[in-house]
Length: 472
Ligand SMILES: Cc1cc2nc3c(=O)[nH]c(=O)nc-3n(C[C@H](O)[C@H](O)[C@H](O)COP(=O)(O)OP(=O)(O)OC[C@H]3O[C@@H](n4cnc5c(N)ncnc54)[C@H](O)[C@@H]3O)c2cc1C
Ligand code: FES
Ligand code: FES
Image (cartoon, rainbow, N blue to C red; front, side, top):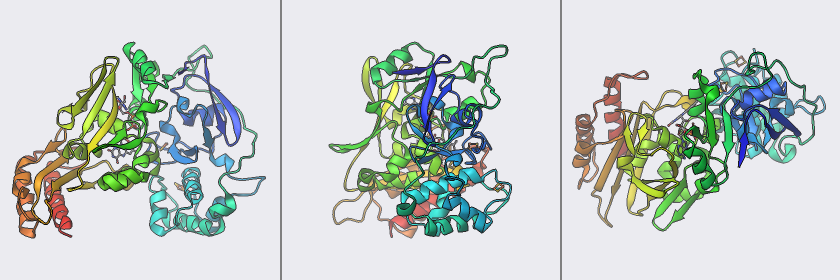
């Protein structure tokens, strides 16, 4: 187990250089880069994961450095915009931005360059849609996206993977520390959340028993909460991403088992998920932006229990089982009993969510739909999951379950709409009747992101569309 307290430094690689960053492991990677290492090319915009200005690569994956505690990169490979140019020669992606006029004020540029570099290195087909998706998590407020898209497309022709072979491994001189915030007045001690990285569940349970440690997985909820919290420096973060038992995706008998720290990116890339529960891949594709997909975990989404959490309707509709663990052993909690109120769950103090088990049934169909605003900040206004079974040779729907998110404090089933569909053969008339019936099931309140009237009408229309789409 690693505990990074003020007395201990975090050791990792930056652009080919080994570095040690002193201070608590709960300090942000962004601050470690900019302040301790003087790598000010990485910019801070929103500080909340929304603008992408702070994008760097960790082990080749684009992530937002404002939401990563530096302790999480212990022993890992970090690449920043300073690592792109080689011997004074611009990286082809940088040259393409200059040639295409893809830069004006430049605040967004380092983050976009890193997202684009990772995309080009992945060898993915540089279609217009793929490039737009790659930069969906990077906001630009002055250049406009057409020139940026043009620059990435241009670089794709001049810097394909086989020529560039990824970022250079050469060592570079680091500029050294700048001014140091997070320093206790009158002393040299850095203040920030303490950080522990256990590698076994036993170690994690022992720390949880002390009562002061808060679990962190992808950090995309908790780091945002801490950013606004004056007491953040007194928090102690218990990193779950080093624990083998919480990782991975596997099929176990008639269940698809997803470890609590599997990320949306992991689910999106998983052949097992695609083969057994493709709706989960579709959900992962519309979750946040690429950087967020590389960080955010399914377990974090479930335990955070926001009514707008993308996975909640799917978990409820599939009757997934949430397996919790603690010093006293494991227990299985049915989805219907897990979400107990606004952002509260059935987890007990000292317990962790270990894995999510989705029952598999080859005759069951599952559909998922979410309506958000902007792709990279796509908190759902409406999210629906619909599942049913069809007997061989029959078009009638049976054992229909509809789960709706965002309409109240917890995800709910829609019994009136389910009753319309039970035993019915999907048709435009049935779709109209189910769309009317679901209005009896949902009673949303006006919210920050949309009105109750909008949510009611959108939920009804989305259900109708899902039924029509299922008819093909
Ligand atoms: C820019 C941005 C875009 C976003 N877009 C979306 C979106 O499109 N859809 C959506 O649903 N959400 C979205 N979110 C919210 C967030 O990314 C998700 O809720 C995410 O799944 C949280 O996972 P995490 O691993 O980052 O959780 P963390 O922040 O690490 O943890 C969240 C909470 O769960 C607890 N926790 C985590 N894992 C465990 C565990 N195994 N056992 C016990 N407790 C645990 C933590 O203590 C914390 O309270 C977005 C957030 C940001 C900042
Ligand atoms: S500063 Fe905006 S995403 Fe990190
Ligand atoms: S160049 Fe100014 S925000 Fe993008």
